[in-house]
Image (cartoon, rainbow, N blue to C red):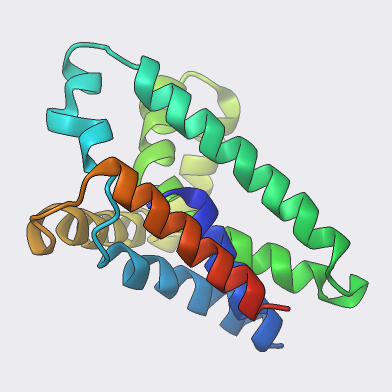
Length: 175
């Protein structure tokens, strides 16, 4: 599912819950609930050809659009959010998109940029906390949801329409 849909769910949760820890936790959990729904983006990453054949163009294109819409949605939501609630809204957005960051972006950063002092320092600081094991467990759950439990997907155009409808429902319910 696109980040924008997960962020919209986080915004909805932030509009209904006042405890910041609960907002982040529920938004994080909502990511997995939403991933149970077939959402039509499996064809974008078909057979991981983007990893094997280095065909990054479509993956980068769709993810850049998604990230742009995510930033626009967040900025738009700030306009209509009470200033005292903007922190909760940001926590909801971060909680909603964190599982994808941990599953896809974090390993790439660690693998490709481990020469950076900051990445090595972050790894060393989090090593005693056991965060690596939490990230591995989360990655396993994410992988199981995407490829083991949900074995069927829907065409991309239906998945995109479904995600737009879900996003609009979440945003209208958050007002």
